[in-house]
Length: 211
Image (cartoon, rainbow, N blue to C red; front, top):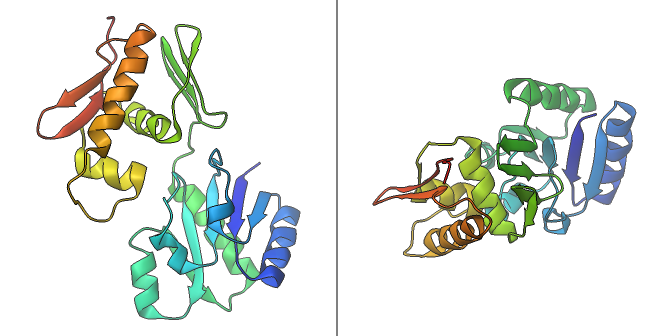
């Protein structure tokens, strides 16, 4: 069953959509604001009823459909971060069709990352190294998941700031470096030394090794 998070500030609209989407087979969790989403939420799709919320939130690693007013500028702005935009008022059937369309376009997300001695369960936020739990903060886990999504690919510092922290400008910061250092130390303490690699002047990558 598709896990759908609905963040809609209008109570009547939220109640209607929650009821209808459940009747159409979606596993729906509804909130008035994306700020109320639990940190561990890992939906398959997010329906966001407040376009302005995109500016304040970290966009989750799933398709995002924005419900907003028929304003071309607002639509263009939202689509810089979201996958689809549906103007209000809309036909419910069109919303369902758009949800299914974005799910078809996006490959199924695998919440289980298995890299031999390193195992990550994104839904339960569990990281296991050589059979032992490794405890990471929210952002440390998000960084590790991002690097593990494509082992051996170098992610630039700007990509990581955008995708993990939601930064939209590149002011000087040591955020990536400090988090990468802590993740590297925790993995090394569990026996995975050398897995977090610094590509000097570019960014970071995850390189599984035997060391």
